[in-house]
Image (cartoon, rainbow, N blue to C red):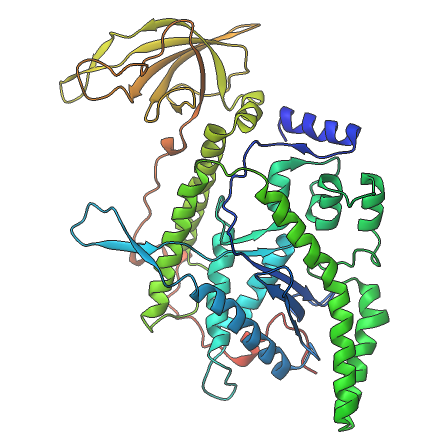
Length: 505
């Protein structure tokens, strides 16, 4: 945690109200998100109990697994949930737009992408578990399932993997979006509780933050649905309701079974409805935060990723994602995630003065006044051509921890401005940073106006996200035997597909 972030949390604790950490919302919020509130059994990871899902506040759809340990009921639940999710996804697979491309072949992508919002990171893990379980199911053979089940599994896995990449918006947790913008006086772990987080940001009318926090800890007022239930709820209410439904079905009493199932639905509906209402409160709060300028470009990346995977699904030869990435694929994925995080951090600092101040406090950026400038400096390149490379010296009071040779970008200069740190002279009170301007001056002999800093000008600089070299990975066929396997992936059985769904006995 940086100095500015720490001060914001301290201020929130002293004033008992949330403090904004950013001026903008740095991720896209869809006009029509699909809100998903999953519920799983306490102590049995991946065992679905119910889900409340919908794209409108007043018309949620409640899906219930009457007996979570019964395979057939779990499959029926997954098929029905799959139809809802796939309908939402397919509604974005209708409008394609051409995108600029240097190749002769025309390229296009969908104009938008789906967005699923869950209460907290536990909801993302619950959907990832469901995706892993469903994508290996077969539509033929000894354990056939509806075609929507493996298709749902592959799409949920795609969305869960996209959620690991910084700045994406196709599968997000409401608590992550809120805590990115507001600082509270509680721990980061407590910020994962949607009820307690909203108690700091927007307590209910007539309730203080202290009273709202007490309500958030009361399972009667705010039942836990994140996504596991409480053991007390399972033991006192859920398990007896499931047993009554089982007994009615075993006795062949259709009327009693229908009554017991209705009671189970009402029980779970009462458990999840408070979270459903809080989800839409969170969405309303986030809509009140202006979107950052670079968020649109990141969402274009989501649209491209969505289009590529959608086209792959349309080929008819799509196969489930592997259980584990092989060595090269894992390394490439890690590199992509690291680069996405660096680009997001840079974009946020370029867009948002609050974020830039945060990075300045820890020496990851700096700001100051230009005290010297040599705008007419030229250097000879390796190709024996002379190019303009102005030198400027910035006096800054910020702690400077950036190494020489790091590329820089600036929110204070016109778009395209790039620079490199030549040297840093650190003093007791201030530091002098010498910078070489490398781009953004135009292609003419005379630089464009205001593209070269002048003495007395106030500037802000932060590292460019692309200064890290892109790793070069070997071809999979040249992977050392210690990091590869000659054996194909084992054939998936029903026992493999049933992992994490509890005991069927």
